[in-house]
Length: 441
Length: 170
Image (cartoon, rainbow over all chains, first blue to last red; front, side):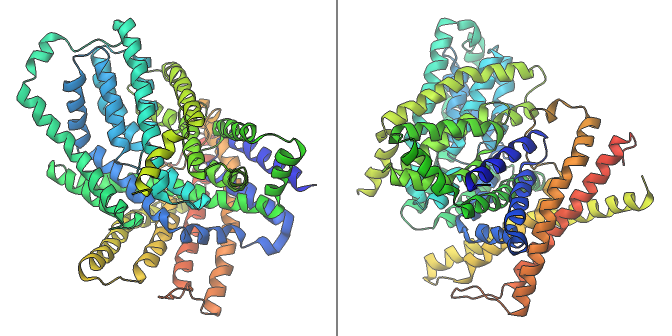
């Protein structure tokens, strides 16, 4: 078999085995290690284990548990409840305001954790019951929460961008900064959509009733605004220390985790129970994440060894003579298709070694490509059948929300995300402006 | 189920639960040493060269040793397009078959870990850094973590067979 055929065979086997519903890390690791043994025999016996040293040497991965912990601490601490309340009283009087406020909440939470899990947890348990109680259309609000929480991987700190930075050998700070404007743009697009829909269909997002509004005093409104400053302060301190070089990336993640604990203590919610739950959930998600990376490294080492990278390049550039933009669009489309089967971490580790050299050769910015990649991940997060946010929504949503509601809710947001992706493709400045400004100081 | 299988499941689950509970607190150890080095550098101008490597080792121990506990909590994500629609019994049957893919992978990992650890002990292998720590302790811990994961997978295989037979192990 040629190396292309073997690579295709590996991908095919992986897809089929994934459909059985066995754990993703196990399937990828099996295909990788079995292929290595079959191709190279005894000599490759240590290869899967050696991937663990590659993981070990990627020291920015140390940030993973801390950024995850930060998000969980926040959702356990009750701080998120205050934050929701703040958006509730300030945006409530407008039509669709509670949904708009939820988008704001998701942006703030995205700035305080590295993945989308914390945003989902907070959205589904704190915002969703309130939204439903106030008569918001359930399929719109589940969509808002799923799409909004996916911003967690685009707005810094982002664990996905850290992983990308390591694979593409680009500075983490540039990638994080590049994610800021696209993240805000997406939030604005979601907000615009919610606003317009509620403008024409007031039924799906009613304003807070007058009697409830009357109960909220101006003093309370401003007191809540102060609560909102706390998370912003955490973000500002953490990013400030990182950007000025006072602390390294890894150290900043620890600073963030410590600050989130202090905030929980301030709110009077730091106790054995909350600490235990946050610690346990952090272990669970970190293990899932890192085992997938471990297995995916073994998988990609095999086809890397086969020379598939050169083969793909030869096929796209020399044989088919595609122009750079077609190749770029094909790559992104392949991410969306693969995201159907695979989780984004595995996808990145598996496919990036194929794509990143090509992107570099085509003279595209690797920073910009990182942002585009992350947005396709966000799309993958909400599209069935393999979407983290879909899983989480199913696990956490109140019983009156059916699976059909969840699936239907993501349709408009899918298109809005694709729209954002296209905007950022056409106008790379959206992503590249902020890093340029900061670096040009 | 045969008595020894039930005993195996009990012991493995209890062991991995306890070890996992310890592993999850490694997060705080990692945080503490990183914070210590940050403060030492910021206030006393003394960088501490062993901290970064030590926290890399701790992270490896954290996820490899904690992996089995995460498996117990069913935190390792699956693609559940079809799987999610099955009832509990069919899921158990599917899992009891497909777990062998995972076991195969873990056996290769474990074998590789053993031989790599063995090499590290024999030649007193060190990391090429200023601190230059010997590598066998961390390799031993990592290999042990893989072994615990393997035990947990066998335990979950036994539990799935029991569910498939209609007599789950409580």
